[in-house]
Length: 300
Image (tube, rainbow, N blue to C red; front, side, top):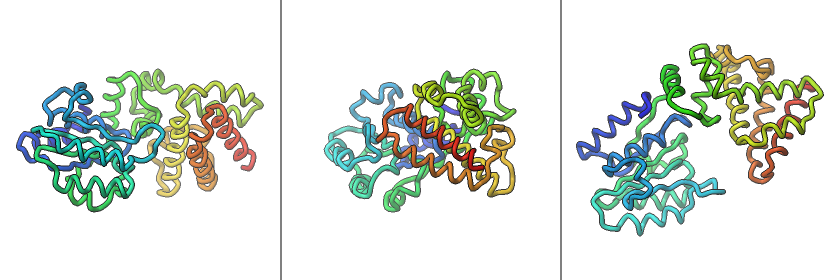
């Protein structure tokens, strides 16, 4: 269990041990800090099985957005009705990213969690708890996950082989003097390279096709998230008139852009991100990103 989630984990274990786990539990907190990991650990503890055995256990049901969908469909919730009334002593239903339930799906879920069969528990995870309807929140216990500290992140980095590039709380520490530089240089070279390539393209006549091809194999949405995350942090420093550690430690070219220009780039990147599934060509998307930075640099 991640060190920053231990208090949450132990608290929920105590509830299970004392038979006081609520019918519906909402685990909330910022993106990419381990909510999914915590939810599955608690599910395994409640059902008294190993975490790796969950998916093959008839008393465990996992619900998330289906491939190609941005919402949890009402039919996925309706399927629960038949499932939850099958006889068993314990059952756990885990809904990942509950904020992606639309109003119909939320209302359908509400009917079940109001009076679930004995022994049936629900876990919902979300990083946007404000998007979950009030009636579900009022019938649930809410557990907020803490953000990892720098020490937590250092320990975490040493224990894994790869980290998703949109793990924002790791990204925010990448250029920090407090993070192990050896690990950083080995595992996150792609991030510095990406910013460097954009900067080189802006200030040279490099062939954009060659640069776009270089990154076409990467997860494009994650690369865009890196840019968005950096812009948000720089904007925060402008607004608060107080430099964050991330701002001070990061030396990429965006640091020299005005708040207005960063806002313009952010909006354009969001537009590009929304069209990823429509375009479905990584090189074309990357081409658009590089052109965006080239044009904004020229207009400076």
